[in-house]
Image (cartoon, rainbow, N blue to C red; front, side, top):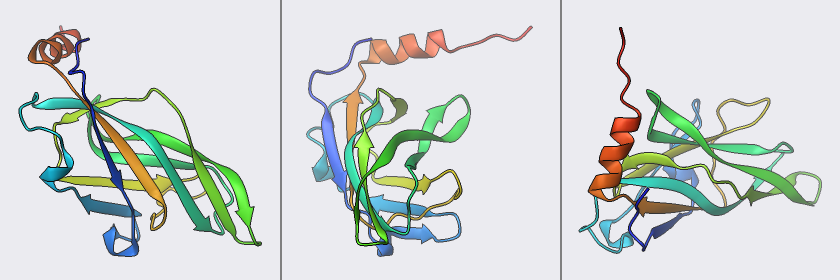
Length: 157
């Protein structure tokens, strides 16, 4: 698959004010267009989680990051990364470190907002208000996008 050689990296810092729905644990962070290197690249890209760190009180389980707005077999959200406990501070604050993976999802290029939430084994909707998440955007050429469409176009009989 052919991607442009230069990717964009966007780091967001979740805060309480970014949480749009405490019950569902959803956060939304605006991303200014100046965060992206160029608007001359293709209309689609592959997004992945490149790095991150989260400190949460009383959260002594690994955390999954769920990204909204992906094109994933008809689903609108998908797991983009996971964080494992790497340290504990005092009795109640746990430091979670990103575990590298190769998960990538197709999205529209240069999103103006990134929507996400956390999930643990015992908590489906975890609002994140600390740490940072760094997203990587790899832009696809027109030919690569068309090839992906052809490979995923299924006919029913």
